[in-house]
Amino acid sequence: ITDATGISANAFYGCTMLTSITLNEGITVIYDRAFYNCDGLTEMIIPESVTSIGTYAFASSVNLAKMTLPNGLSAISSYTFQNCTVLASVNGNGEVNIGANVTSIGTSAFGGCSSISKAMLPNGLAEIGTSAFSGATSLTQINVPASVTSIGSSAFSGCANLVRVNSDTEGKVILQEGLTSIGGSAFRNLDKITEVVVPNSVTSIGGGAFMG
Image (cartoon, rainbow, N blue to C red):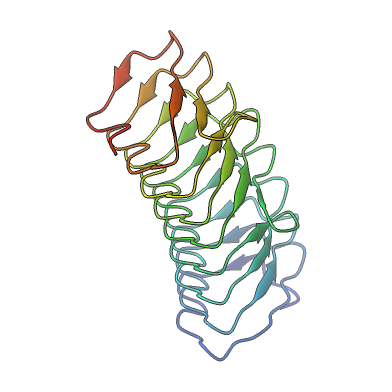
């Protein structure tokens, strides 16, 4: 694709035989479900000109293992990578590095991404949405920066191997001052967590937030 300024909704929806695509600089938006269920794709490089990626854009592309996102992206939309089960690398080698300008991670953005092992979230991120990393069963370590004010319901639910949040100590979750809300079941069924530090700034903890 050489002259496009946008990739329309459903443009490559279900193109299971598509194995490679090169997007041109100048594209500014990738709309909803543009590459949904593109099972042949293993790697995508998104041009630096892109500032917006829609919901479900790459969801259920079950062989997508590596993704490079542009620095100008301000949000990871809901369901963007949901059920990309082999996705292990975003802007990094074997880990997820969310760009510095991203302020929100939407509902189930990485839900069911069962191959992610480490995620680094940027300073400036304000919101981690409902079920954002739910079912990321290989996730062992994540940082939640002090800029985050809200962690949505079930955000890390079912991350059975998560052992470090803002901590060098295995089994410990440290949530930082500035956080005000922890949704229900946010850290549910994290069997390997033995210690949780909740800051005084938190005013709301939902039901079952740390259950199990």
